Length: 153
Image (cartoon, rainbow, N blue to C red):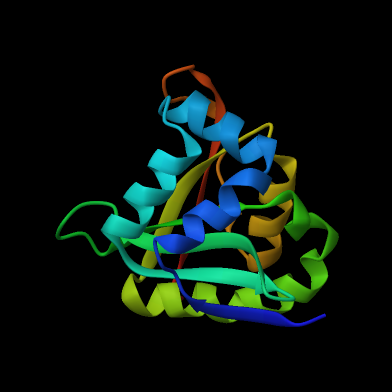
């Protein structure tokens, strides 16, 4: 199994869309009402760093980090994954920690929100070392979301 991570390109979106995890699509709908395409296009446009993960040449995720505000030292990490990522998650996970460190070099504090129903994403974020607050109503649907965060110690 060959795992590659490279700078994200807009063309990668079309390759990822047909296999996006339903939990990710549900999270975006609950948080903002946006489609997966809208979230990915926005993410690539505003992120200081964004990457595409491939397994055996196939796009399995697009992820990055954007500033919470224009002058903020807090970054918002994000990831949109494919169903195909879950079957190969160990190979991909081994590479993820170094990208969390790259994000922390850009922003000394990272934080964002994850839908409490998105158990796969929650496990991945905990594995990376993010801390979690108690779930609270969040977004358009007011469903429980966790705020997760990490900072340079």
